[in-house]
Image 1: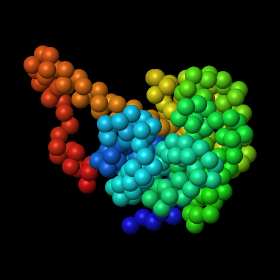
Image 2: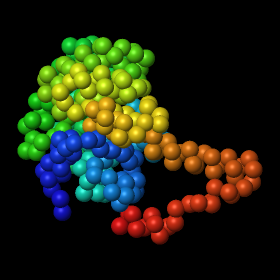
Image 3: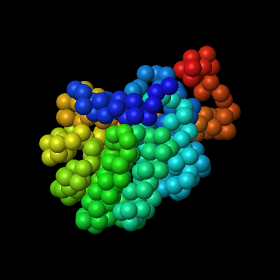
Image 4: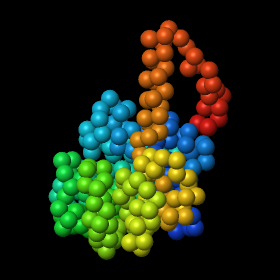
Length: 268
């Protein structure tokens, strides 16, 4: 059985090697095992995808539920898992920092901290203090926890690339291992962010439709995540199939389904 320290080292190594890697976002144990069976090398949780499984919206999950979800996914696969821990479930830097120690106890080897409070973007100094507190907390662990610091401007109507880069640079200065500005919409923006920091950059791919792994790697991105998009793809199928049954009285959606045998192979 792979130890947590071994998973942590493998995760760090993915960020150090040449090129970019895709880190898909499962929303339950089954999707985690399917993605592992397909051959992905690491996984990341999705706050929205997990919330959907509980019949809730993003941001409506408790810390206790999030930690239980982390334990479930870590038990489902031997892959390294990084957790979307939102804003650390606390505004206070010291309280938020404790969340990352609890997540490590749950089995993850990395996690992200946002500068979005749930209502607005934290003031610059407060946002940096929160990242620094989380960095100091995870450095007490006996394995290399990969902390990702997120600048959320673009997801919340603040389309200010200069401020976003300023925040990411400050997060790097206080010790963040990876930086992430979800909502970048062009390869030019990706290149600007990459050029401005000396740490690996995570890119949220659904905001760049049609882009390829090769193009993002050429732009300097290191880690490519998809957030809740896979979960929404599943929901798209459910909704479309439901409409066909209710509105047209048909079952055409049954054509082309993956076989139960293939699912069983991947789950094994």
